[in-house]
Image 1 (cartoon, rainbow, N blue to C red):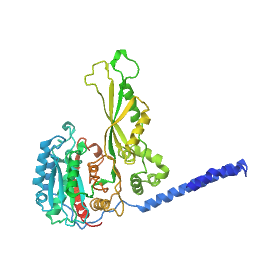
Image 2 (image 1 turned 180 degrees about the vertical axis):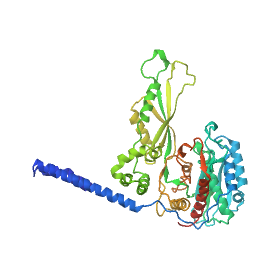
Image 3 (image 1 turned 90 degrees about the vertical axis):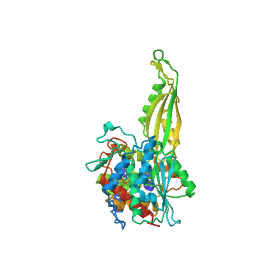
Image 4 (image 1 turned 90 degrees about the horizontal axis):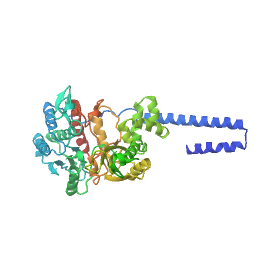
Length: 496
């Protein structure tokens, strides 16, 4: 393409010396038409090629491992786990749930292969010892804590675990007691049926995911260093994730009585800055991460127009960026996203009619892995363009690295194969996880961190996640257990 563009741009100068103006116009039109035809041909060929390369969603693969059959006992155990109000700070609830897990999964806790450590008071780290120490261990992550819930807005009480129309309603059904119980049910079933692990498994359940895993996941990470030195492992879902950056915007000015001042107050200056950043998105990173492959994998099952767009990101990037920006989830996959979470004043005893001297806005940014903290701060400085607004960093998490994916990468292929075996034909693709997970606490052990939750979202479920009427179908919970069962069996192999 570079050669063609260079040729077209130099052609008019040559023609001016050798032909009439009419010939110049005709020849230029001909060249442009030829160029357009070339682009159309290239787009068509590329669209067909990508369609041929991944024509269908991944097919369901049969496994030699028998599927887990859900029972009333398993459902009842899940319902009981949901009844513990394990929100941040509820120490007794966490203690009671840990005791419940010990009593409910006796096969696990009595197994000679399994040891359980309690970390930072209420987080759990299980070690399932494998017989072949030459095989690299892997790790499965989850968390015991759940978001708070306002009962008045729920169809059924948020910590009841009651079933209605085939759905189990309760806080934690989607995030993440479904995963915790699914992992334990899968391991319990395997051990009860004579499973003897070859590869060591670490299972970590933090109790403070809502607090960035500052005690639980960090403590488990430290314990692993003490136990195993340099451990490489597999965690689940996506190949990278957005990191967290908390900034403050501060404006300092003169206070005084509201009747005796004119001109912009500190609040006015800050409000203008907030308005600017809320109306200016971060630049698109489309094409710099796994989202390019994700869109190309989606292309074959889309209608003809989307198929053309998704197959030719190089040409239609501005259009695709605009389309993806409309959807909050997709927007978070192609750029850093931010929201102002709080505005306050440093003065605790400010009176009526008194102008605050120092005011601060707190901004939370989910930083795209293709960007740096400096990129984000420079974007804000450029958009605000006001030296009265001070920008400072309150908290920054580690920028997540990109985990290897595709053919030949054992961790990715293990998750990939497990999805194929349990779920109906789905498109399986690497992606950016738009929310920071506790997996970032384990980066010192491995670059192979994969984030995946075996949860099928029904229409409208996005609002249930940390919202009212959180639920999971009994059928979906059965698939959750089956996914983890197949994952453990697949990961126990030397290769896949």
